[in-house]
Length: 198
Length: 221
Image 1 (cartoon, chains in turn orange, green):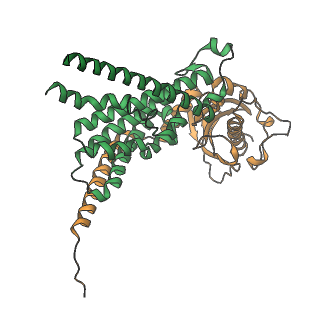
Image 2: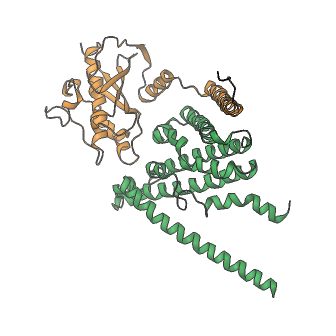
Image 3: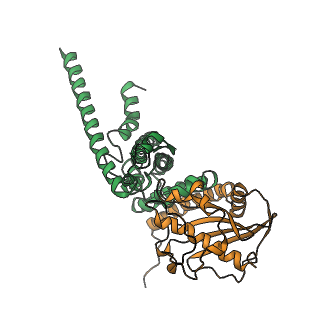
């Protein structure tokens, strides 16, 4: 029968890697205590920067079904009765180039889009990022939710041939333009189904 | 400390910027170089983030060079580099969220940037802490300089902006060409800059050698 023997070199390897990993984990845990990001707080800060009326309550999105390809991440009602939505559009179906997709805040009041603002994206500056500039997004302000075609699946949306509202495209950034518009469509759907449109 | 040994200690600092410039001479870290240099600010911040990770990882690898078993040195180096890379990500996400979004995936990919592993393996694991830190600073400054320069040229020619500020006279003159912020333009600018940098460094080296020869010749006479 072979005698069980601990190989010294193996022990040294395991111990040295374990010590380095432990120190690294401790260091990262300490830094994490100070750098943890409260996403809800970040979002509310971004909303406050884009819409003056304070948030009155958070809407429950339970049971809500998104347009395929979009995700309603948060919904609020402001004190003045406006509905505020954060919709995320994934990179699927060649919509947008950002690896993590794009996040767009849409404010709708009394059936009219009041404000559209970018929340998160990593589009190329000078190209896709132009679709998140304030002067470009201003074209959505004043558009009635009735004029925005809301499909079940984003694949069916582009090009939009319904004759309803279509935004101007940013040169050389068609996919990103579509991503922003898809997020607005997601917000309009949420507005219609979560109470605002009734 | 004698003048010669002082020069020897600080040598990695200057060679990292010119002679061993990671981007234009060693052609390392090409993937983030081409991907993030769509603007000067992106290039500068990516360069600074990489420099921080490089300096810290070089220092730790050098400190632990006698403790890390040779057989597992690469996983150990990756572990050290990944720690500092994650640290940069955490800090940037908290205090520079726009930049964090803009650099996106490439910030996480600092871990596998071959410049970091190459310096840990070929320099920090063989040298004491101070020269290793200086090597990290030198290579990091060289990398930052190259990325900022590429970003500056691509942003200027591609969008008519410098560090995000639009130069209206360029835009009105119709100078910006979108190709420069696309991958094809990135390769073009990278290629041209590599030629210019190499010619300039070689000319400077030649001049320096000639001056040295002249000096030693004069001394003998």
